[in-house]
Length: 229
Image (cartoon, rainbow, N blue to C red; front, side):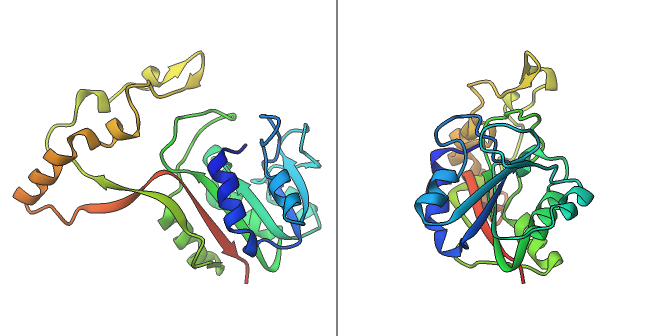
């Protein structure tokens, strides 16, 4: 599944993409532009797709969390794509590790996904992996992060001291309608993270000597290219 920002990111990273490409989670639910096929082919690369279920854009089925099934594929590709997939698997580290098993030595794995985005069930929505996850994964797994690839839409994430607005604490049932999780429209990325009160937040941090508790935070999504060594 893809949004326009994903297509733009992949085009900008095409110099890291090899001649043979496998996209994991390639089922084309959206129709036109629902996976990376057109971007990859337009760049002169060969594209294949796999997913949990057969359907449009799926050349073979696979559960990326199933170690034995991944081993049974018996092939590797110069580049494996994971776009908007890791938030939908219970164990993102295993999914990413198995994706790298499908990458030939020296090849790349291009990952893109949301950081702040509405909850969406395909079939479930578990995580929002952040930059430190990818950096630590690369350190533990012995792969490298391409220096120009760890990109995200930056915003400032600031802690708001004191009592949080009532709308920031919701029962789980309030995020569910017809069995699907959702965030009510009033709870945008700005209200959830307190930005309408950022001025107050900054003043209180200075007063309480908490100004160091400021970090860059992805506003929408982020992408990274991991290279298998």
